Image (cartoon, rainbow, N blue to C red; front, top):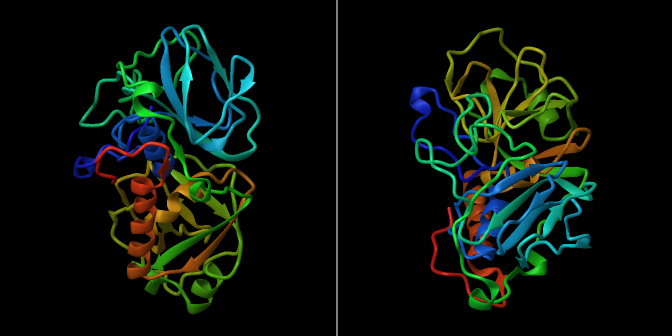
Amino acid sequence: MQDLGRYGHQASGMPVAGAMDTFSLQAANLLVGNNPGDGALEITLAGPRLRFLSPADIAITGADLSPTLDGQPLPMWVNCPVERGSILTFGPPCSGCRSYLAVSGGWDVEPVLGSRSTYLRGQLGGFQGRALKEGDQLLFHPGKRIDQLGTRRLRPDNIPVYSHEVTVRAILGPQEHFFSKDAIDTFFSKPYRVGALSDRMGYRLEGPRLNRQTDKEMISDATALGAVQVPPDGQPIVLMADRQTTGGYPKIATVITADIPFLAQAKMGDTVHFVPCDIQQAQSFLRRQRDILRNGIMNGSCPPLEVY
């Protein structure tokens, strides 16, 4: 279970957590008439088998993990009715690696420190602080059905395309002065591969070494989503949803917020390219992404909700 994260507690050492792909999470909720930041199931690579004990409307967004309802392919990026006794299953991943399942009315999970997000390392939030397992029963609140909402779908031209080669924009800094010009040029020109040790805390990348121009160590400081740390081995780590609150490795750049969802859909072995960006461009890209969520729903108007 993930929502937009547990903000306001990093000073106490509590990571934000939250959905890796916040665009897909918000889209799934909007499609079923929920608040965009409500909780949804984040399904990574291998999907569960779910039996619905009461009727509902659902939406699945993000990665295409071959969802089927009662043995029939289930469309994505649209709200779909589910009847009592129906079984939702998933198959092999076709694109991306993380799907989001929202249910109209929202999942009935108690917030912890203001968030329904699961933080696995801390064993808190979500459903008993852990991933779901066989036999679990999740409750959800009654919500509006399709006959009340109308059929909702994201405009086809706004549906993200996930590939094995991901290009993400990054803002240089805040410790770029730790690195040589050659290292910075390498970072923005050479491909990196998503390593096997990547997880929700950080994407460990493999590729050309990023050499420092000083042996000086830095005092640990706060970390941000998308910060690109470079440990002594010169292999960059992009900090993701479950990132630690502080870190002592210099940060060569920060991936912009609007591109984090695309990086979050990359899986082991996929290729990542970094391109330079400035703050004004980053803000423009984020505004456009939010406009898609506000105005990109077809066949039914979105309620007047704030998109984060």
